[in-house]
Length: 162
Image (cartoon, rainbow, N blue to C red):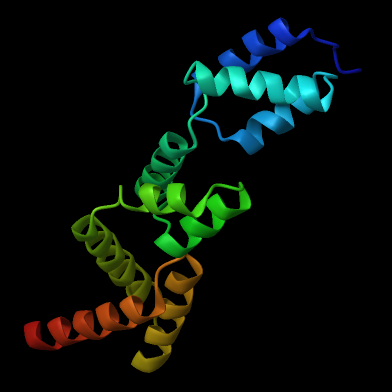
């Protein structure tokens, strides 16, 4: 199916609907606009109109993205930062987005993931469980020093309760 050719005003309307459905970043909108057979100048005109009308706001996108990836997918801050960086979000907006994650919620989520992951591994030594758990959580984007501190804290709590 060939891509349809749009006028600038039609492209603005379509892009507004695209942005109204969920928060978008400029990279996603630019990618969508490429399929509209517009020139580079026309695409930038559409982007400017979307920003002016507040349909496109990178800071708002970064905040929504950070909250969503943390709450729904339990991603750590490093993975969220990397994903936003790949979407060409500015460092300022990335930092604003990460501030949306409350430290207390972050630690609670990390502790739940530690408990769940440690319990998943059976029949291996404790140090192996800890290493596998740490590797998994660091891969999920949690900071390595924080992961190890929480694993040690979790194990100390476990020993006290036994």
